[in-house]
Length: 86
Image 1 (cartoon, helix red, strand yellow):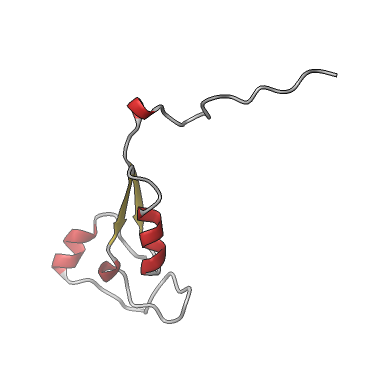
Image 2 (cartoon, rainbow, N blue to C red):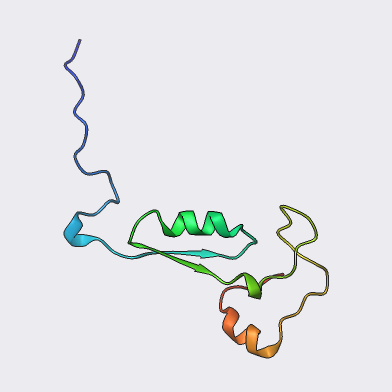
Protein backbone atom coordinates (compact mmCIF):
# COMPACT_ATOMS: atom_id res chain seq x y z
CA UNK A 1 0.00 0.00 0.00
CA UNK A 2 1.32 3.43 -0.84
CA UNK A 3 1.49 6.42 1.50
CA UNK A 4 -1.02 9.25 1.59
CA UNK A 5 -1.55 11.12 -1.63
CA UNK A 6 -0.19 14.62 -1.87
CA UNK A 7 -2.69 17.38 -2.50
CA UNK A 8 -1.50 19.94 -5.00
CA UNK A 9 -0.91 23.31 -3.40
CA UNK A 10 -2.27 25.33 -6.33
CA UNK A 11 -5.23 23.93 -8.31
CA UNK A 12 -4.91 24.10 -12.08
CA UNK A 13 -6.19 27.38 -13.49
CA UNK A 14 -6.00 29.26 -10.17
CA UNK A 15 -3.41 32.00 -10.09
CA UNK A 16 -1.43 33.27 -7.15
CA UNK A 17 -2.41 36.56 -5.50
CA UNK A 18 0.14 38.37 -7.63
CA UNK A 19 -1.41 36.94 -10.82
CA UNK A 20 -5.07 37.52 -9.98
CA UNK A 21 -7.16 38.75 -12.85
CA UNK A 22 -10.66 40.05 -13.31
CA UNK A 23 -13.36 37.48 -14.03
CA UNK A 24 -16.25 38.81 -16.09
CA UNK A 25 -19.63 37.12 -15.85
CA UNK A 26 -22.26 38.20 -18.41
CA UNK A 27 -25.85 37.35 -17.55
CA UNK A 28 -28.05 37.23 -20.64
CA UNK A 29 -31.12 35.63 -19.14
CA UNK A 30 -33.61 36.79 -16.50
CA UNK A 31 -32.15 36.36 -13.02
CA UNK A 32 -33.39 37.59 -9.66
CA UNK A 33 -31.56 40.64 -8.28
CA UNK A 34 -30.64 38.71 -5.10
CA UNK A 35 -28.80 36.08 -7.15
CA UNK A 36 -26.95 38.74 -9.13
CA UNK A 37 -25.93 40.40 -5.85
CA UNK A 38 -24.64 37.09 -4.49
CA UNK A 39 -22.49 36.63 -7.62
CA UNK A 40 -21.05 40.12 -7.20
CA UNK A 41 -20.28 39.41 -3.54
CA UNK A 42 -18.30 36.23 -4.30
CA UNK A 43 -14.94 37.85 -4.89
CA UNK A 44 -13.51 41.28 -5.71
CA UNK A 45 -12.20 39.81 -8.99
CA UNK A 46 -15.73 39.09 -10.24
CA UNK A 47 -17.30 41.70 -12.49
CA UNK A 48 -20.95 40.97 -13.29
CA UNK A 49 -22.55 42.41 -16.42
CA UNK A 50 -26.30 42.41 -15.85
CA UNK A 51 -28.66 44.70 -17.75
CA UNK A 52 -32.14 43.24 -17.23
CA UNK A 53 -33.77 46.20 -18.99
CA UNK A 54 -32.30 44.89 -22.25
CA UNK A 55 -34.02 41.51 -21.89
CA UNK A 56 -37.54 40.74 -23.10
CA UNK A 57 -40.31 40.66 -20.48
CA UNK A 58 -40.81 37.15 -19.15
CA UNK A 59 -44.09 35.26 -19.52
CA UNK A 60 -43.65 33.05 -16.44
CA UNK A 61 -40.95 32.17 -13.85
CA UNK A 62 -38.02 30.44 -15.53
CA UNK A 63 -38.87 31.85 -18.97
CA UNK A 64 -35.58 32.33 -20.85
CA UNK A 65 -37.10 33.39 -24.17
CA UNK A 66 -39.52 36.14 -23.20
CA UNK A 67 -42.55 37.48 -24.97
CA UNK A 68 -42.92 36.86 -28.70
CA UNK A 69 -42.14 39.80 -30.94
CA UNK A 70 -39.92 41.60 -28.40
CA UNK A 71 -37.74 44.25 -30.04
CA UNK A 72 -35.36 46.72 -28.45
CA UNK A 73 -35.36 50.34 -29.53
CA UNK A 74 -32.24 51.37 -31.52
CA UNK A 75 -30.55 52.92 -28.46
CA UNK A 76 -30.99 49.76 -26.35
CA UNK A 77 -29.95 47.59 -29.29
CA UNK A 78 -26.66 49.52 -29.54
CA UNK A 79 -26.15 48.99 -25.78
CA UNK A 80 -26.89 45.28 -25.97
CA UNK A 81 -23.55 44.08 -27.36
CA UNK A 82 -23.74 40.35 -26.83
CA UNK A 83 -27.15 40.58 -25.16
CA UNK A 84 -28.97 39.34 -28.20
CA UNK A 85 -32.13 37.24 -28.14
CA UNK A 86 -33.16 34.91 -30.90
